[in-house]
Image 1: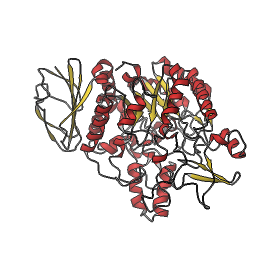
Image 2 (image 1 turned 90 degrees about the vertical axis):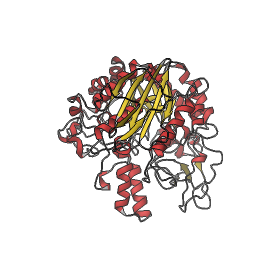
Image 3 (image 1 turned 60 degrees about the vertical axis):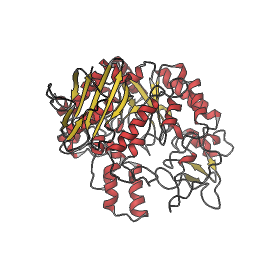
Length: 563
């Protein structure tokens, strides 16, 4: 496969509202990020993915955009954004922006004109339908609860919204709409952005006729993903986007693509024939969900390491030599990785380092979500009043008010799965509000900030942060970590996830004990070696130890170079 900068990069995701507040209004902002650029440079990341900072009424924290070519005032100005970009580029850090083009805000001028008249040239920028027998045009359920249809009194029709009713879906069937989107992308690329992360990009093509979804549950509204995910014209639209825009710049693209298989992944990211460079798949994010649940974040399910191995190995092997993987364990929509896949109590530091080792040693581009590099954890706010996420509030209302679920049972799911777990402010130090703001934060800080914070991490040579620095340096100096082939070993082991990476005459051995209990490791005979060199570990390791047979400690991680 071609060797490119974006394969060799480490990406850091910033959720600006919660990163750092420069002016005391309780909301993170662009100048706050500017003040912390040296921190990102010290960590060693190559690329920053910036969650939406565009003008927005903030119904879904910026993913409801009212102006694609302006900045949300509470984040700053376009001049601030230009200074941020310049500061990143001065430090050798590239910037990718969030491209949210499945939907806009209902306050976008396009939608205002679309709903103003059925004769408006903008009417077909969105998806409008008549009702059926006094009901919605179909029975699809919104990701945020209720119907995907909202009745508009002014024009006496329904419009489609897969997410909030304030996020009407764009009609990609309309060529004029697509031309406007491409013009907007050119505008940002000419300003110097280095790529796009594309929000729910595999939902832009809907099935003709928008048919009813099968009645799988007793609920009024049913999940209709088969009619709007990986739709019939998706590849046509993305090919056009690549031809009209992306092919003209040296940029990176990553698509957020729920409900994709490896076959979809290859088609989308194929080195010669694909339209995107890489994608976010969600199979590994579903291993702790009730298999019967149709919408995510509404259930807790005990996960098994063998399931994680199975999913990750399939994506590693199927895309090898064809497409490219993005590697992540958490983001702004997911719980904190150490609370979900590790141990956020006694072994928080060890398990956070183990998860980092796992992520950075896989084949693909690793993504670090803000706070992951210091081992930030989920938060258990006592009251639903403490939560801000629209999806979390809707889930609570759906469970408690509509379905009669006990409030404590609903809160248990929210404590485990709420998107606000990842959105509490970065814990910079042990001062009030974790040093995030001098004002009142838009959402409360996790109470554990006095023990877990950046200042503590920077003062500790054995911190999680220092371990991330070491992993990133290893990746930059060892091409095998980027380009080596992946092979799983000890496939049936219930506690140990072990694999090799091979490239030219080298081989790496990665050993990870995903358990609080010590676990016996035995190297299979098909992994021979003459010499070994320990590259990184989260415990002290004796140089003379025989790696053919040993016991790994709680959440122990080791990486060896074998020759």
